[in-house]
Amino acid sequence: MRRIRNPTCTSGIGRRRGGARNKSGYDPGSLARAAGDGMPTLQLKINGRAMQAQAEPHDLLVDVIRGPLALTGTHIGCDTGQCGACTVLVDGQATRSCTLLAVQAEGREITTVEGLAHNGQPHALQTAFQQCHGLQCGFCTPGMLMTAACLLRENPKPSEADIVDALEGNLCRCTGYVNIVKSVQQAAEMMRGEKA
Image (cartoon, rainbow, N blue to C red; front, side, top):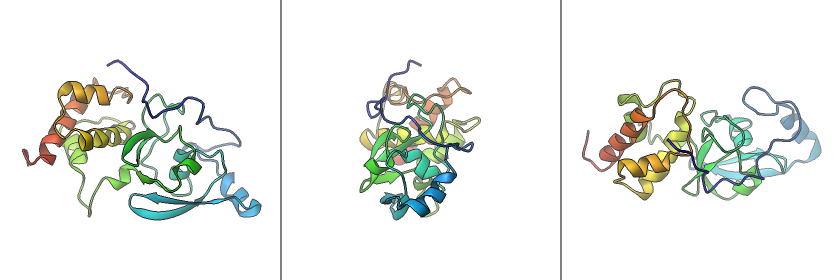
């Protein structure tokens, strides 16, 4: 599979600055600093819910999602917008959350992989990925799901080439992508009511 840059990614934004971070990439000292220095509180709408989080002007959306908001389904992979593991939907568009400052997301509709399920029922993509074995280790899966959700919203009947093209910016080191593509095809059929 050839890789292209996701058009929503911008290369200058997203480089982490500052203190030591734990394995998730979140700086555990940021909340302590927030309490003492009047850090701004962001008003975010994530997965249909109004949420608040304190963030420094240079904090990335992925760090706020995984850190103070504790939505850890969004993964940090390459930290440069190249692998797609951190993909979320921002106003319905697949966006690398490691390339977007948290302050840039204020007032926008953000959907993470935790927001795909509806009323406790998995999204068709989640079901299809399970049924078609579209995941192995699972690290890339949240980004794949979010990118595919964007594709299926815009194109409910994608060709195999459309799916391959949409997923080009999402890397998986475990699979040959065959089952991932099959999963998206099955989910599209399920969403159109063609497959139970």
